[in-house]
Length: 314
Ligand SMILES: Nc1nc2c(ncn2[C@@H]2O[C@H](COP(=O)(O)OP(=O)(O)OP(=O)(O)O)[C@@H](O)[C@H]2O)c(=O)[nH]1
Image 1 (cartoon, protein in one colour):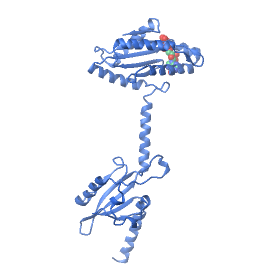
Image 2: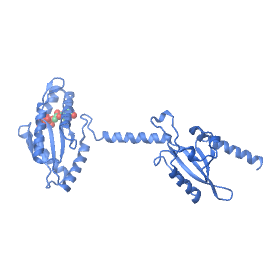
Image 3: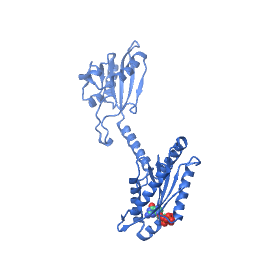
Image 4: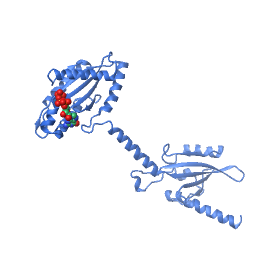
């Protein structure tokens, strides 16, 4: 090798030492032959310390079986492979300390395994090339969390914390399909506050909101976990009573009516309200979830017509 070539090699070595990517070269016994500055910095082990040591002795926590299968594919088949953090968050257990990523404890890594041939063309070594993708991983996780939160929020009524109409319509459709298939007993109940306009007019809209909130709490408290209560809109609530026969549904509706009548709200002065309820048990003749709801709504209209503060069954 002439002086020019030695200079060139020297520059290349400096480049590999300083690059912000982990570089490890191992021989066929998995012993470390090259360990660059990135690996030194993150492992706390110098190139001298790891030289000729087995990778698996140095890092007993490495996913041995999985990594050997990758390395053997490189040695025997001369094939290159790539793994991403989404499949396996990290290969080398390096701590990650940059604060911008928040709760991220370990460095997330992508890794390439690259076969290296000797001058005779035989694969005598393999390189592990490690990319730190902690920032991208943290961004992705934040985005996923935000999307999940948005999805949850888009299903909830902000005033009462109950399911909103969107979630309700999905649940009703599901329950309708379940009833159509298995014909379990199931009831749909529509609850509407009587003369709610007067509450708003006499006490103000903020008090009206509080009344709806308290009513929502009462309904949620009074039902089974398997029932779904939702705010359909305005002063109208809807309830799915699963596994409930018509006569049980009627008793429950009556109990809710009484509970509302007896409830004294402090908003801030004492206030009483009543509700009217329309009940429609599932019947096979119902053509759609919408038809089921319309039947219950018709029963509610009857309850209003018949004097309010009462239950009517479709
Ligand atoms: N405070 C408050 N009021 C609401 C909300 N949504 C709807 N309302 C009011 O609810 C009232 C409903 O009035 P109506 O549909 O006439 O019914 P009602 O006065 O309850 O009479 P009946 O249902 O016939 O007993 C209207 O005044 C709406 O403005 C809300 O989120 N908060």
